[in-house]
Image (cartoon, rainbow, N blue to C red; front, side):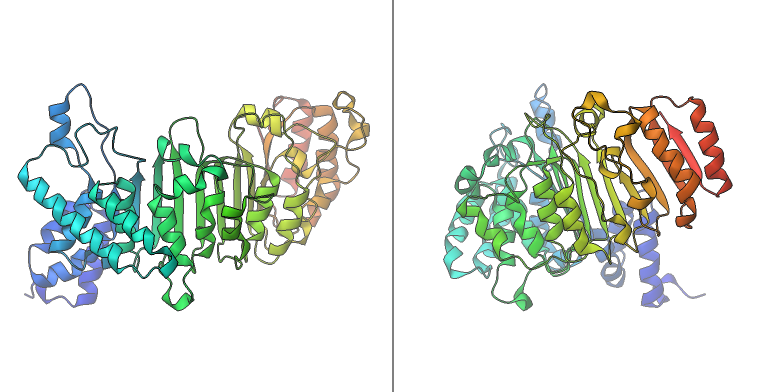
Length: 485
């Protein structure tokens, strides 16, 4: 009977891939297989290391001794393992790192009081990463960055470690997730702080320098497809203007930011950051996502226009600081979207909570709607605030909102024929005014949308008798109408 060792490599790789995806303890299982034979090790190691997560366990200040025993810093372990597994970095497909601003919140130091063995290990790690820094092919004008990094690594700066780890794995990494702890963004709230922040945010500066090389053939991160950034905790939010490097990555298709606020980008940037955005080529980004984000319409329009062919745009609107009273004007967004008529498939603009919906979802007579959507032949899923798709017009003040002041165009005139699913992302507040538009859509326009199968309306009056008749109208056309509270 043939042994498992006699299996052809193709079947062996499929077996290990199944274990990596379905085993309850994939790391332990694959690590054990690596010890079985050199052949098993060669087949299993890529799956063992394809996902690398770096994090630092939150210290328990009530039990420092226990904390010293349980602290796990994968950023250091990853670098140290390179000494024993030189091919490790080539197998990493995903990186998930937590980045801290500085180490003074870790009273036991970056590695903890683990004795001479750990001191030796730290020396080895630092030497590896300093070698990486010295070998970076940076432009001559940026050589001082190397010295900054060398000094930072001597001080065990966590962001410098994380940046070096990303460079070590850049040839194979396809998905990069960065989770910023609160204080790591407090220094960069205004462009005036850019020079000071430059000396701390090794990661942004490193990737930016790498993507501004003279030739694309020498560009790093050529396999990076997904970049996700999270701002974790606190009350401050990360700005977007330092992120021009993301739009230079040659094959990035998914860009996602959680917890951001921006008021400069798309208007007037100071000279020290404007040049970073001035010479951008259209980005290959196809999915653009901003969650819990307070970005004005000019910024959103600018970012949309910086992409070559968007397929999905998702913006979860938040209200930060004193921006609550501002109106989100869809005019610029309407213009920017027109450059993606042949590619856009999903459009999703929603609100982070009810408070945001109250401020930004109100009907305003100075705000325009998205009129361009009928021109999108591939657009199948839409989720929009009511005032983005069905504006009021002509009334001198909000107290005069009644059916006479509703926009004369019907809902059907604002939607593409390819539509399959449509959602309103906030509640109907004036039933008598809005229902007339929806009834007209049901009575006259449904035949214009042969692929439409589901429509969701949010209403404070879900039991209103008007909805029952409208549901029957939609049902007769083969469309599910959902009235949700």
